[in-house]
Length: 236
Length: 236
Image (tube, rainbow over all chains, first blue to last red; front, side, top):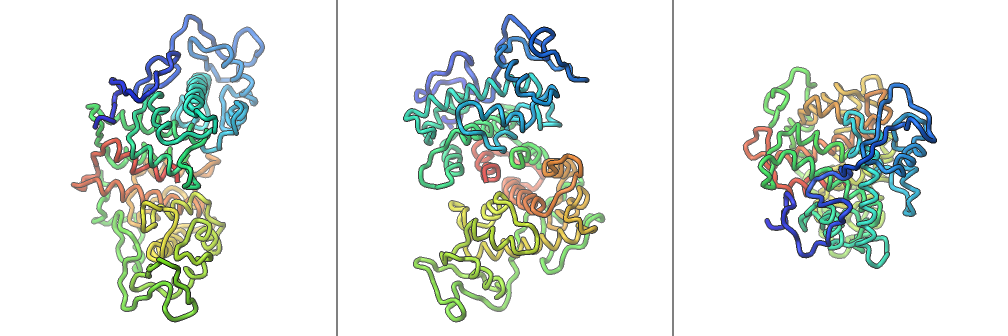
C-alpha cells in the first residue's frame, strides 16, 4: 500500500513542497507547536485588556503572536476567557470568505477544545492552535485553487491534504469529493467544505493512528472505542 | 463485558418485551423481512396508478402492505420510481410529529438505499424497509416516552435501543444523549434526534459487526476501510 504514507516519512513526487513556516507536518501532527523566545499570558497583565474572569487562569502558549492575542480578546465578547461557537463563527466570517457553517464551527471546537469533556469552547491555547491551523489551511486552499474559482477538485484536494500531512487514499478522496458535491456535477469542493474536510481527515486520522500501535495502517478496535471515537464527528 | 450482548442471544431483565410483529430483532438485523402470501409489483399493472417510468422495473417485495404501496405512489411526485430526499422529507412530516431534519432524511436514504453508489434515493424495496422501520421506531419511542413529553432520557434510550436489537454500552448512551441535548441541561432527546440516533446506531453497528468476524465485540480495520465506513455518516 504505497499510498499509505503513514507515518509520512517518504516524499511523494506529486506533492507540493511543504510550507516551511509549519516545519514538516507528518500524518496526524498538530500545528502550532513552534517554540519561540517570548511568552504571553492571557489576559495580559499590561495592555489594552485589564480583565481576568474569575476562576480563569488560562494563558497563551509561549510564542503566541500578539495579533492572535488581540483577536482572541476582541472575539471573547462575553469576557469568559473562552471562545464559544457563536463567537468563533463571528470571527471566522471576517476572513474574506463566506462564513463557515455552524457544523464546521462545531467541528473546529471539537478538534481544538483543550477540555474534551466540554468541546463547546476553546481557551487561549486551543484558540491559538485552531487559528494557526485555519490560517495555514486557508493558504493551502488558495495555493491549490489555481484558477481562483474558490473550489478545488479531487487531485488538488489530494495534494492539499498531503501538504497538510495526510496521505489520503484515492477511494477516500473520491468519497469526500462525492459527498461534498451536492450537485453531483462538478466533483469539486468549496472553501467551507475544504476546511470541514480537513478537520474530519485530521481528527479521524489522528484518532485512528492512536490505535494503530504498530503503525502498519491497521488497528484493532472494540465496539465501545469505535463508537466513542467517531460519534463526536457524526453528531457535531 | 456483559453489556455487550452481541449478537443478542441472551435476554436482559431490564429490557422490555420485544414487539411481536417484528419477531425478535437481533443486533444489527434489518427490519421488514417478513414473508407473506401475496406480492405486488410497482408501479401496479392494474389499479389507480398506470405509469411505469422508462427503464424502471422496480417492484415491491412480497408481502408489502397495499397501504405502503399507496403512500409510495403518492410520495413519488415526479413519478421517477424513486423517492428522493425532498419527497421523503415531505411524506415523513405528515406523521403527526414535527418534520424530520434534512440530515435525518439523508441518513434514512443512506441506510436504506438499494444502490449504495447512489444513496440519494430509495426505490420500492428500500422505501418499504425504511417505512416499516420508522413506523416501528415511532411505536418504540411512544412506548418509552412514558410522560408524553416527546423526549426520552438516557435509561429510556437504552431500553428503546435494546428493544430495537442494539445493546448500547452506557458510555456510548451517555455520549449520544450529551451530544443531542444542545442545552446541556435536560439530558434527554426528542423524536427527530431519537430517529437519527437509531439510524446512526443501526448503521454503525451493522458496519462494525460485518468486520467483527469472530463476533467477539472487536474488529481489525485498515485505515481505508475505517474511513470509507464512517465518512457517509459524518458527511450525510
